[in-house]
Structures are given as structure tokens and as C-alpha cells.
Image (cartoon, rainbow, N blue to C red; front, side):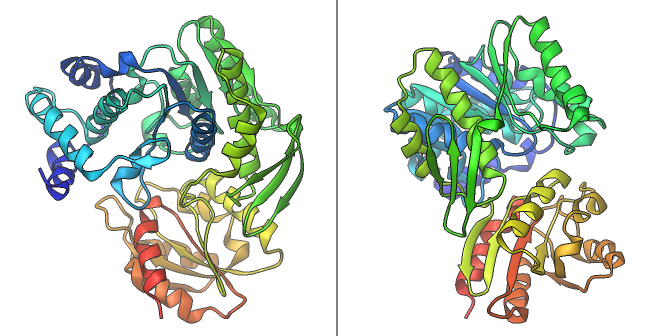
Length: 429
């Protein structure tokens, strides 16, 4: 198959839908000879920060000399981003060849796999064929019933910040969501979790769940210590932070939340070091400094400032608001917003409405996207000017036409905005 035919097959309507459970993935992987059994993993779940944390861990492991796979979801610019080895995306030829190999087994299944299950099987086959030393495996949604959870006990399970997202699938309370994420904790394994200091409810509702399940499964629980962070300095080029005992670290990612993701990643690497992985302090410094990650408070330009950020739930939007306030105090922002239909708009916008100069509504090109006119209607009651542009390209051009040289534009709401927004920005004259 050509790459076009390959992607058409992967995205075919027959794989559509979300069907919880591991049996289909297990069946497909079994037919492929269980490639996941030949691999070692760092398994990463959570609501926010999964991608950045995974990228930090993978970058350092590569610097340490390990052939490192990285599996992420969703992609930002191209599908190949989802499967990487040592920072290199799977090639079109490799993706087509692997899909050809897997296709007969997937087509023969009586209970067809979902698209994500098919892609997970592809990734396992790819990483195995590349003989990866270790794979950083990002959960798609939840944890307990996510197709990535077919793996045996990983080298380490990492759970990032927990918040409200996918409540229809995972449950309406933080405790429900935490319980689903805790599904990646395996018997006798090691787990590292994100904490939120000075939030008693989080300690009770989230950390309490992780402690109980770890105890039930005889797993060793470790909490990240954010008190090791000091001296953070933010600019539009990089973030600097001191992290004991490593001294000053430079992060190419500039969101105000990134020092916390980096701290979680470094603690994960320390846990791997305890297991015998040879990771030097210099590997950590170099790996953190060279990480590449798109769509997380990504700066496209400076006159006006144009930012792409993948925030798509209330706590993600809150983190974006904190980053904007950090970088641009007392500055109003032109927001380009496009979201999926299931999002809680009021809860999301609550964190940024006070920063908004205007909202420009658009709709990602997906069947589950909220129509831009419906989003505009919801935003108008915030008493901020709202312009419905529908198309992402038109929304970007409108924002740039409106903006003065010293203004700030921020596109938020879905990772699916990013490729068309970036393309429109680059073509703007």
C-alpha cells in the first residue's frame, strides 16, 4: 500500500468507536506473536502532562545510549509522530509495510479492533522490530481498559496530574478518574505519581486511591517532590530551573507547568537508575535541554506573539492561563478556540475569560468537533467580543489581521487545531 492507502486503511470507518476492553488488542497481538512480550516499558497515564513527561523521559534515555521507543497520542502535525525511536518518526515505508503485515489478522477478527487498538498493535510490532531497549508508552485514555494496558508489569508506571476529562467514559468524580488511571499499576511493580501540594482534596480523592491500589497489588508507590524545584525563570525561548541536586537545567518548553513535568520525568529516571539503568547526571541535563515537543505552549512568532497550546480541559486551560499570566502580565489575549463537542465550555473558559481581548471560534475538521457557531453562542454570554470564523485557516488570518504588533494570540481547545493553524500562520502574508 502507498502511505495514502495505509492511512486510509488505519482511519477506515470500520475501526471507528471506543469499545473498552483489552481482549481485542490481546487477540491481535497474539496473532502477531506477542511482540510486546519482547519489550520493556515506562507506562505513562494521567490527564495532563502525559506527552511532555513522556518526551522528557524518552529524550534522556536516548542521551544515555538506550534505543528508546516513544508512543504518543494524539499526533499534532503528522500521523508518524505517534511512533518514534530515538526521536525519529516511523517512516512512511515502514508504516506501510507493517500495516500490510498486520492487515490480514485485523481483517480476520470477528470483533474488529478499534482504530487505537490497531495503532497500538502496529506500535508494538514496530518497536519490537527495531529491537528497542525500552519504550515510553503513553496511555490513550484512562488506563485500566486502555489498549496499552495489555503489557506485563513495566519497569515503571508514571501517573501525571489528574483532572476532569472524559468523564463520560471514566466517571464523574476525581476518585473515579483516579481509579481508572490506577489501572496501569501492576502487581509487584513500581509507580510514581504527581502530587498537588496544598490541595487536601487531591490528596484524599486522588493520592488516596493510588495508595490503596498500590497496597492491594503490593506495588511500591513514590510521590514526586516538587520542593526540589527552585529559581524558575521563564522566557519565550526557554525555561530555566534549578532542580536539586543537578543545579540549573534548561527546558526548551516554555509553559509555566513544564518545570513540574520535568521534575516528574527526572524522578522517573532516578527510579530507573535504581533498577540498574546507566543514566548520568549529564545525560539528564542534556536530555532535558534537547527535548522536542509540539503544541504545548509552542511559540510560532513574536510580532505579534502567536502561541499554539493543546489545552483541552479545565485544568489544562488553567495551566495555559498561568503561563500567559507569567509571560504577559496584565496583557489581554486574542484566543482562537476550537473544541470537541463533549467539552465543558463554561468550566474551560472560566480560567481565561478575564484574559480575553476577543474569542475567535473555529471547528477542527472532525465529526466529533463542536460546530463553531454553537461554540460562539456559548461564549457570547461571557461578554467578550466573539467572532465566528468556522474554518481554522480563516480564524488564524482574522486573528493576525486584528492584532497589533505587541498583541498576543493563543490557539487552544484541541490538538487537532495545530496542523491547520500552523499551516495558515506560515502562509499568512
